[in-house]
Image (cartoon, rainbow, N blue to C red; front, side, top):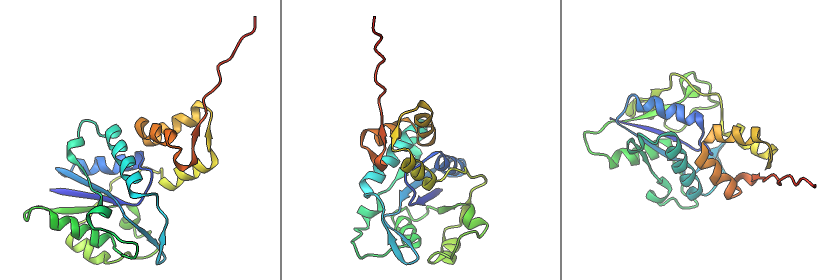
Length: 202
């Protein structure tokens, strides 16, 4: 049986670790993919390039799931579905695409967070009823409070990482490999400032 965890969050963090871990307890394989596009109020929201998000997702999985990495399947739907600039696809379309690629006797279930479980979302998403009917949602039993948007806000407020406390928070949230990738490539405008060695004059 396969579980599917899809989102447009970036970067992935310890909250996603909790969600995927819960799914691994129930399913043989967990399929994870970042949304190629995100729409808010009918308008497309700007996201980092899919290649960048796939690389971050890969590093996240290597750090958080080293012993079960073979049970996690990462999919680049933007490439598979040849998403053009004007193409509009929704969660239901992505799930249907994945389901059609699986063996006929395979089962695919989708992970839904607390927002969907307790109807806290602002509006119903496209074909929500069909998603629940055809993909038997798996609801999280617990959810980490950290959010990707909180991390991005932290990055905005801390462009230059000087203290060990700030660095350790990022490493705790996204893992060591992804942290180094963010620092090295100046993602989200973040710079890790190296402290100059203290020179003692004799």
